[in-house]
Image (cartoon, rainbow, N blue to C red; front, side, top):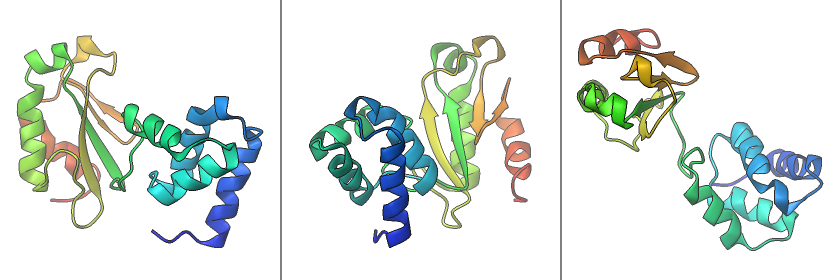
Length: 157
């Protein structure tokens, strides 16, 4: 990835808003990911340089927390909860239907860049399981039969 001069300046500005404080690394990474969409090595290098910390520390945080991604996500990122309550109520079958209809695996993005597919462990809505997030929209009591309708909310299949 080749970053534009304006993007580099924006990254430096974000770090500056947090006083280039290494203790603010997670907040800075959230803001940076919001700007760029993901956290490739080039972005991590700028953050490390601005905060005067080793790149390995930035990389360690990015790879530890599931919210951060080093690969571009689709315009509509899909996250299927596979926590215990969701799993026992059929989340795996819901996930399989997303994979089938989108023709991608977990961790991949559709060729048109619209959807990416991931799993997460719990969204805290166990009483409404299985739960699926598409962007910031929450779908509850999901079944494989509802997957096509969810996708159609964003794109006609």
